[in-house]
Amino acid sequence: MTLLVVEVARVIPDSANSLTIPLTFFDIPWLVGHPVKRVFFYRLTESTREHFHSFILPKLKLSLSLVLSNYLPLSGHITWDSSQPKPSIVVSQNDAVSVTIAESDSDFSLLSGYGQRPVSELHTLIPELPASDDSAAAFSLQITLFPNQGFSIGVAAHHAVSDGKTSSMFIRSWAHLCKHEENRVSLPESLTPSHDDRSLLVDRDLTGLDEKMIEIMRSMKGNKTNKRSLSRNPAKKLGDDAVMATLVLSRDDVVRLRERVINESPPSQDPSLLHLSAFVIAYAYVWTCFVKARGGDGERLVSLLFGADLRKRLDPPLPATYFGNCLFPQGCFNRKASEFTEERGFVTTVEILSDLVKGLSSLKVETMAEAYTVLLDSLAESSQFGSIAGSNRLGVYESDFGWGRPVKVDVVSIGQGAMSMAERREDSGGVEIGMCLKKAEMDLVVSFFNNGLQS
Image (tube, rainbow, N blue to C red; front, top):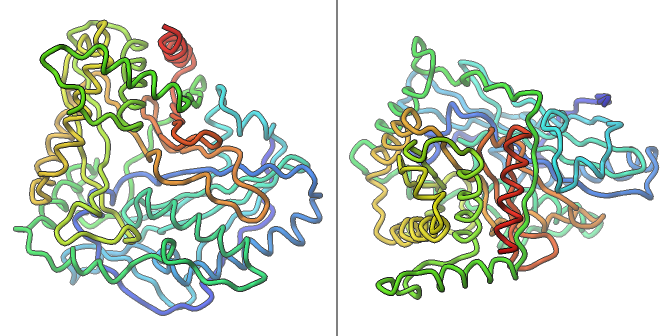
């Protein structure tokens, strides 16, 4: 494949003010993590190269400038002033989002498909997001044209600035303004981010939670010589045989799997007390396929994790449009692999995830530091660690810039063994699960996945 970089543009917010936004204890754990990378594919077979560059691209840039006025922190950087106890997002005059414009001769249908795809090619569609000891960019974009096939929008977002809900809301907001650009519409309330409510977190006295989270963040750094460094640990290199694939559960599949749980629950268990959401059903089913595919000793320790959105669960609650991070780690750590590979493994996983979700109602934010400590300790002990990015409620397929909804959306930043989740594009109630694995292991996962649905 060949990727030609045509331009690296700087898109400045249409109206901008300088501002400084302190990070919260929800943001701090993501400081040294790697960017969240997502790619949106749009089929566009009738547009010529000239039409794309003269009409479509200018509309994308103009609407991006407009929407950044509402999402101003995305044009800034994370810095850590020596006089401040924690880092902040700083936006200065003339700050901008870097937008790489490129052209690719790759097979658009292959990369935007659901089958196995080379991860290395997907990564070429994502821009760099610079980070150094002193500064880390918040957000960058890459728009790649596949002549006579379509185009992609690659997003690299610093997780300490925004979580999946905020990032997805931004893309839908940008698409909304682009689609209605001629009418100069404003954003609806559901897409207008709330920045003022950050004070509800920053001003809370949570017995030094900020300091505890900073110490946890520092413990993640391989090089601890510079305690204020914002640089990232080196990324793990993906092998040449790493592939990405998207597994699909239709609405009917979810219903059948839910019925399987109800039918296989023991007499002592009232299945009506289980939390049987599509998220729980899909995650549990794919997790069991993943553990089976890895094989090995049934006594080996495995762990699974997801991030719970607490916007509605805080007291007082944050608005659904809160800008930033509001995720709490919920997981099941260091369990024997055999619990998930035996005949009742799927139901066991559903019960575990159900308890974790129901436990959110009594969750105390003050315990977040302890939760992260348990998580990090389990990383060293587990032979297999599963995590999931996104959810089936983010509405990633609602991003229509005026040329139709995306034909595919992928989270490219999931490491080998991690998973992503999104709603089905054409099937309300269905779920898409993205995975990145070595090809041999992916073949096994797909086999277990398909066979299990037929049984």
